[in-house]
Image (cartoon, rainbow, N blue to C red; front, side, top):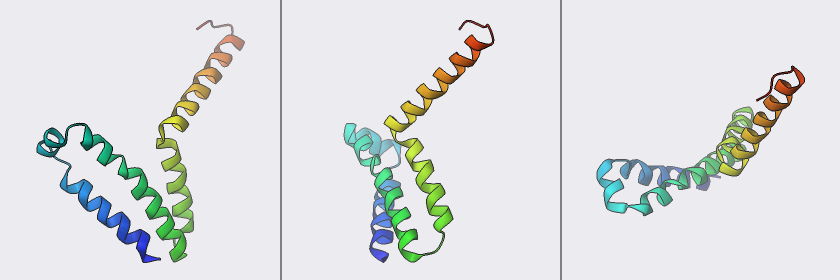
Length: 96
């Protein structure tokens, strides 16, 4: 149960240590790959909260917000909104 919390904490500590310009220059492309671990941390936080049985509502909200941050899901939402806006504009006689 606490494993997910400790994993999240450990990864967040490494991300905090490398969140500076010197680390960005030194690590180069690896810095960005390292900071993709933020998504893993978010998943560990949600699992930790669910296994503790506290804050289930917060875990659900956090999961939804995390899903929106995932690039393929974000792109799908943006495309859907643009299509919806385009359809509304056409229906109102405005051509985009």
